[in-house]
Length: 423
Image (cartoon, rainbow, N blue to C red; front, side, top):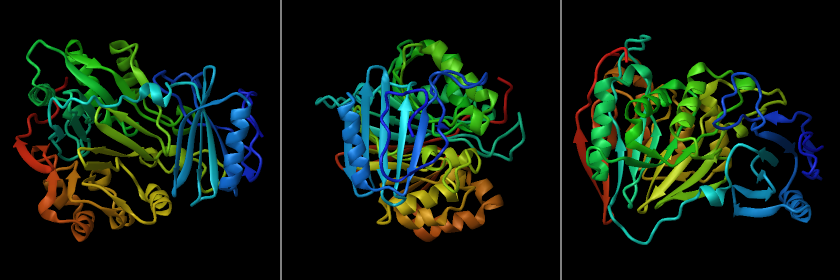
């Protein structure tokens, strides 16, 4: 059983192919008016093995597909192929005995997107957890979620991760963010700040509104090179209008931006930062039966690990128990990192994830007030597995971790902003 819209893709032999050809969503083109020609389609094959997967890779190469990316690990076999304008990504996961084959038409190839570091070191690498105002969730007044991280590369460019909700994107907060990234990069007023990559973990507005406001307010002072996200299809998940607004805002600001829809097992570099894609919504789609669907938008969070200067950051986004089940099955030996981001602002307990992740620092995109008020049980789980003296709360301060000669030094700055200012 092949791809109806792509007859040039060979059939997979061995295993049980599911009947449905799944729509996994597209890229920067808005899909609020229906499916787009850029939508990624996925074939799932159950009850298969590595030999059948490798035989299929041979069929692809015989059919004229060039291999652009190859990675073999205990947790899976991963390949990206290209033939003319069609990108094909295929991966096999032994924990599930499953092969997934994805036909991509919305993004560039991994070698094009990847940006190896230069030999010169201009700056030390820094990681910032930007402080946001967290309060009870009252629409157009205050917000209890949102997260915003920035990684400064050796060459002075930035990687920006997510943002915050519209209630947090006040004039004061966005102005403070610009001050902080100018200070991080040594960029003078009037000179543009270079953002090598904006990565959005999943399609909730508390993870993108702040960045969209940044583009609208300071667009002339921002040079955006790359955008990274993997959103499910609007036809399956039902995305909100703000997701389409974000897409249009990015295209207006940076029509020629490089875009990548990351898939599980991919590895690429941006400057001196290496990205490993551990899990995406494609691993959760039709996981329990053949019906297209998810257990909510948080289940579609992409889980990435970013490594730099011999340290690493594990981004759990808003991972829930279903995501945790996939991670724990696929990485039974556990995961090591320097920094782990607490899942879903400490709203999700996900104890099985924390039990399998070894980390030195915990970054918590929430305020201590709301944790003590509403989330004591979940916070107790974090305290069970990690050193609470190394917890950092985004609702209480901005923290900047400077990686200097193998040591980590920390600077603190106050949170700016307040209740929603209507902007």
